[in-house]
Amino acid sequence: MKAIVNTAVCRMYAQPTRECTVEDEALYGMVVDITQTPAPGWARILTHYRYSGMVPMEELLTQQQAVLAWEALPKKVVRNKNCCDVLSEPRVQGVHLAHLVRGCVIGVCGQPRDGWQQVQLADGRRGYVMAGILAPYHTAPMPGGEAALRDALVEAALLYQGTHYRWGGKSPLGIDCSGLVSMAYMLCGILIYRDASIVEGFPIRPIPREKLQKGDLLFFPGHVAMYMGDQLYCHCTARAGDDGFTINSLDPQSPLYRPDLANGIEQIGSYFA
Image (cartoon, rainbow, N blue to C red; front, side, top):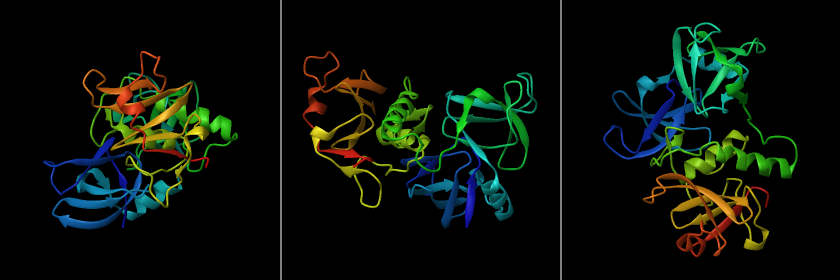
């Protein structure tokens, strides 16, 4: 059975209880598969990027007619700000209908007008979002060629500057290392494995270090980062003093150099291999 994530950030737990590890976060508007109902009020879901976890049923919209209607709507994604309000009318004094974060998907109705986009929520309610906050919702790799896509991947990762580290997080409210790179790729229309490893069946493949280019991924033991070019890479780390999104360098002469990471690269992965 399919369902729609009906809350801005839906935490996916390892067990059917809120008192356990968060494995991932599904975001508003994602259509997921319910694969089990292991306990009252809980469902195991499988996301469209093939990650699984337990979520409270109350955070899902499960009416199949609503799911079909939602899938048929044209969509945009919250991208250009950390978050946004969905308001009842196209003015800032409108009644608050919903609060979304970067990566949430929203249905759109017609073209923007006077700086506002009319939108439709998963439950059928209509409202308005400032049009400049939204961006195209890519379900296939962005067009424009390899160089443009590499640039877009780095630009998407940099949107999360200032975000603190959250295990299992993938929003501006808190994000982890694989959440950062997987969301950057997802915003560009590419679904990669959500954890810090290269997995067969996903489009990241190993490459030699001399082939490293911007947008490629650096894999360390239990950690992953995105290469930005010019010896720089960005990642999200819980290391004290960094406490989230940070930029480091592979150049030993740089003040941003971290020898533990520079010397600990296990693999380099590329979508463009």
